[in-house]
Image 1 (spheres, rainbow, N blue to C red):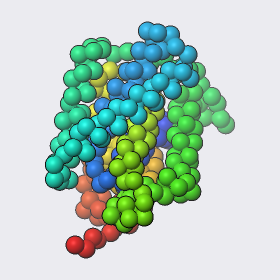
Image 2 (tube, rainbow, N blue to C red):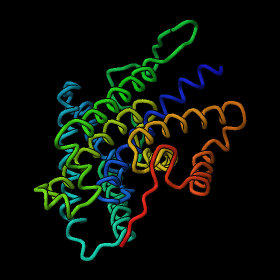
Image 3 (spheres, rainbow, N blue to C red):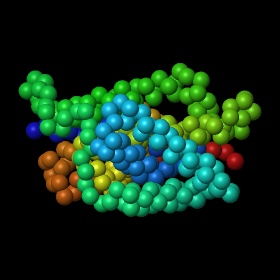
Image 4 (cartoon, rainbow, N blue to C red):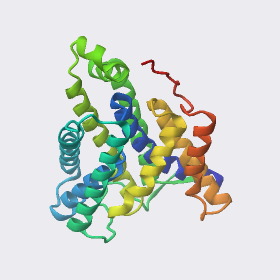
Amino acid sequence: MFGQLIVSGLAVGACYAMLAIAMVIIYKTSEVLNFAQGEMAMISTFVAFTLLDTYQIPFPYALAITFLFAILLAVFFEMVFLRQAKDPTILGLIIITLGFEMILMGFVGWKWGPDQRALPFPVSSIETYQFSGLIISKINFWTIIISVVLMFILFIFFRYTKLGIAMRATQQNQLAARVMGIRTKRIFSFTWALSSMVGAVAGMLIAALGVLDPPMMMDPLLKGFASGVLGGMTSLPGAAVGGAMLGVIENLFGGYVSLSFKSVVAFAIIVLMLCIKPSGLLAKHYVKKV
C-alpha cells in the first residue's frame, strides 16, 4: 500500500508541480501571481476535448492546435488586460487575474455546460505496468515521465538559451534589461505564452487522471500555488520539488489518516512555510532597496 500511495502521489504531485512552474514562470519575470492559470488550462483542455471528441482530429494535431490556442489566449490576456492597466499595483494585477478567471469559468459553463466528460487520451487509465511487484497505472506512469521531461526541457531553456537568459534578466532588473536591448514587452508576452502551454499540459493530464468539467482546476490550482510557496515562488526546481512533496504528503495523509482532511494539507503547508521560511525551500530571499 505504501508504494502505491507514493506512486499515485508522485503522479498527482507532478501535475501540481507543472501548475506551480507555470505560476513561477510568470512570477519570476513580472512578479504577478496569475490566479487565472487554472482556468486558462481548463479552457485549453476543453478545446482539446472538442478537437478529439467532436472533430475526431488525431491527437498530435489536436495537441498542436491546443497549444496554439493556449498561446493566443495568454498573449491576448497579457496585452489587452495587464499591459493596459494604468499604474498597476501587485494587488491590482492579482484582482485582474481573478476577474479573468471568473470570465473563463463563466464562458466554459455557458459553452460546454456543467456535465462531466472523459478526455480522449492516448494512454489508458485502466491498464497497468508492473515493476518488482509494484503495480502502476499507465496514466500515472506517463504523467510522471511527461512531467519530468517537460521540467528538464524548461531547466535547459532557462539556463542555456538566449531567450531564457533574457527572461531571467528581465526578472532581475527591467530597466537594465531594456538598456541592454532586451525588448521586455515581448519577453512578458512570451512568458505568458510559455506559462499557458505548461498549464495546458497540466490540464490535460489532470483531466486524463480524473474527469473534465468546469471546476476541475480549482483544487489543483490551489495545490499548485501551495507547491510554489513550499518550494519557492522564484525557483523552478523548488516548484517541482514542492509539487512532488505535496502530492506524496497529501496522498499518505489520505491513505493513513483521513481522506476527509486530505485537502487541508496544502493549506497547512502554506501557513507553515510562510511562518518558518517565507522564501520557500529552494529560493533565496531578496530584499529590494528603494
